[in-house]
Image 1 (cartoon, rainbow, N blue to C red):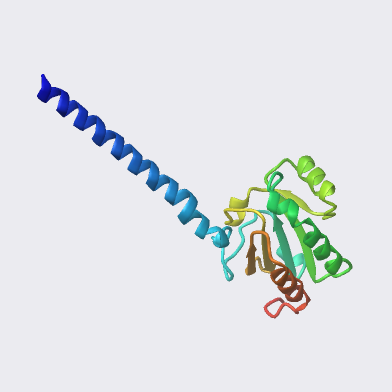
Image 2: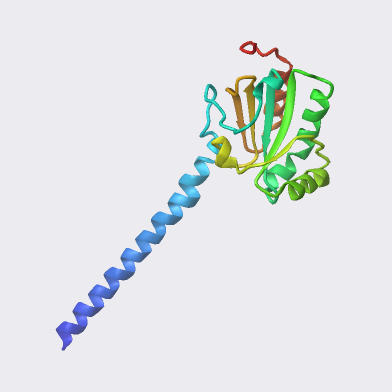
Length: 176
């Protein structure tokens, strides 16, 4: 009887250790390794790849800046002042077209953008995955053939915001 008890106790202890190890691996993978990839979120689509957006006419402008956002994303909300600067910088320009893409219903997405003070005339209902993107916010600069020229992911620091604004001022060298 004593021998059986020791075997059962040993098996129980081994099971507890195995579960603890599995739990530790999951936690490390999710919070340690996953957080080191935070800078890469949204970079599944890369410069040079084509955006597959059905029934969209890329030729209506030389460049398209797509803001891939999502209601409830605090980084999207925190980036609203930058998006307002983007709108201001591109207002009246025919060579740059701004579009927002959100997974929410169009009316809900438009209401969210209005609450942020981000007035974009073209708002598409589309999940980030449609653009080959995992996370929000992500900005895609796309040429008139639907080819990605630049990808900016996450809440951008001020130097990267300036880089985006500067990039939009440059002529599209591959357009036409």
